[in-house]
Image 1 (cartoon, one colour):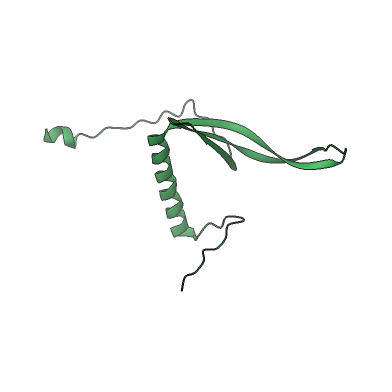
Image 2 (cartoon, helix red, strand yellow):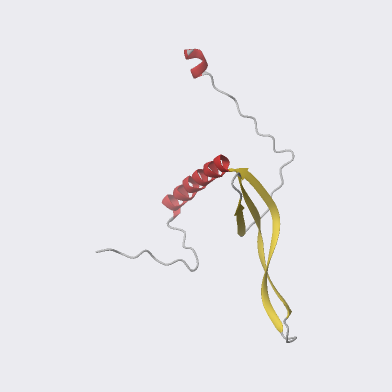
Length: 106
């Protein structure tokens, strides 16, 4: 029994079918069983409005869709939180546009 608990598993990563894409936007939707994440990027664009004048619009070009169960989504959230925390420890806090500073209690 002790030998089984000490056994290590070697993980081999196969990147032969991997695709790399850039995303600056994510759209998330959920079901009771899964989390659906569409990754893509915002493209500013102009198109004619109802009055014929150009309207500024933002087009969300979806490049990838990832679907995972809730346990996988929780592991992803934990891994991302850990990566962001380590980055901020080394480089300072990441400022998000439009984010409000925390209110100081005192």
